[in-house]
Image 1 (cartoon, rainbow, N blue to C red):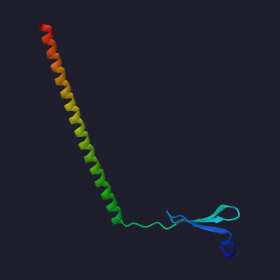
Image 2 (image 1 turned 90 degrees about the vertical axis):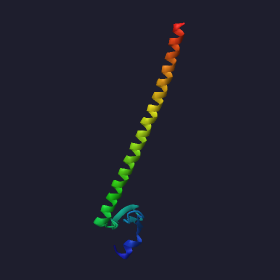
Image 3 (image 1 turned 45 degrees about the vertical axis):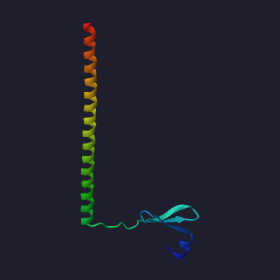
Image 4 (image 1 turned 135 degrees about the vertical axis):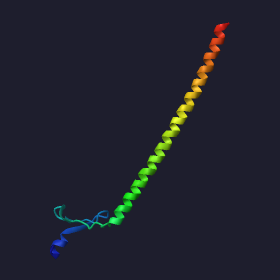
Length: 99
């Protein structure tokens, strides 16, 4: 772009992706875009990310399994309590029926 053209355009830089956007001041339209450079990651960085991701999945699985186990134990406890209460009620009914 020439110096005269630059006076007619606004230069905007995206803070997230570093893309440069040239906006025409008169027409209020995008005249040109220039992609920002991405940070290149090494193979070691990618392997570290994958290892952390797998560890996180493992941790989440263990938490879910423990939660499910506790849920089943609580359900069994409630069932046994209801069963014993029902047994007591049934025993009282037989005593009343014998009289």
